[in-house]
Length: 530
Image 1 (cartoon, one colour):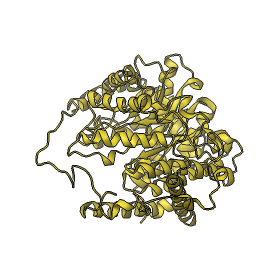
Image 2 (cartoon, helix red, strand yellow; image 1 turned 90 degrees about the vertical axis):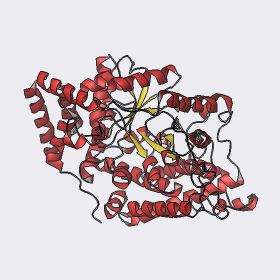
Image 3 (cartoon, rainbow, N blue to C red; image 1 turned 180 degrees about the horizontal axis):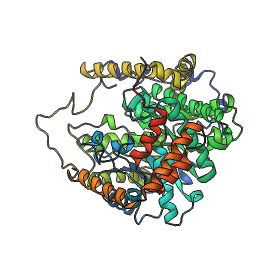
Image 4 (cartoon, rainbow, N blue to C red; image 1 turned 120 degrees about the vertical axis):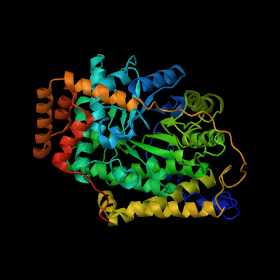
């Protein structure tokens, strides 16, 4: 939005006027559109005092290589003042593949930590008291298995299920839209999602059972309005699936959370977060029929935009991330991850990860942005932009409804095509110089210094395979086979899948064995029908 023409439109292509005044809010009712912080429709935030009562959780996303290496990074971040953990898993773990599966070759430990069995999860959290920290796990197709492993490790530490705190992403619909780390057909995947809802309601009531994610939708090329619309439509689909499964909306909805992207257009991002809370509150009350105000209240985590990081002049990314983090805080996030400046080149080093955390700490303790709740409220521009984002998002939600809801729209390829078109428009504007990226298509330099990057030991894959072989030799194979048999039978006959899955994992079944046994019953998803 920095070119001569594009400077006057937002990232979602809303026309931006040179000046806003009272006429831009003609007929605008602050009581209906804003309310008070902590009250319906929650435009101004989910809690009355927001950061004056408690700062957002500084939850840096981390995970690479082995469980031992990631444990060391976790400990370093906690020592540096981080207030929550966030686990990145490698692609094989996300896809339900063991580290020695031929399909996992070359990917073990590369973009996250490799977790094959309960033994890996124990090593991941060695020396970290799970009763004292909250942990977010970015995992979807295998979310149930990873949550159960976490619970089992906590119990081994003496922490009961009703005391563990954290979030599992568990948002499979956005995988079909934007990422692709799915395993099973949509219906079977939704069953796992709602089974996890029910299991946590009974066994881990303080755990947030889903983080409905717009982040990856935005990373795939959507606009802010599309990110908002497609994510909330997915949220409505989860609510409806849970209700069909017999769950009461006011029993599970207070534990739903969201995950948003913090992109470059500061004011549009603030407007997006404010509009998101307002839309969700109204839809949950009026459409879902929720009676509990906690069911109307949207709580969310935010991560700065990885797709905006550049390999050219990588230290510029420190500035980008700081402004994006400020947008998240001005918009009222509950937790935040700030990307490291070197992530366009490789995994973050210890030094760059610490600098990313310090960015949040400076924002929290030196900038003053948390001193008052929703400080941009009443701005002619921000309120007008909030209304625009809301209207655009509601129009897209209506289009999804016309196609039968989020699941049917995904199966027809609607959201995917919308994102693809948006990404293409952005690429064209970048190529034409209408969209300026400092250091990439303007203010470039003929030579560039490349900072040191983190590399993964190529021997890791062999090490993980050797550990798996040892576990398979030492475990009670009959117990594992019996537990996997019960899991398959439950998949065929009905019943909550997490209870037999827990037994299998406790018997030292692997992620791959659990996933394969379910795939034998459910089949595997092979892509869009378009």
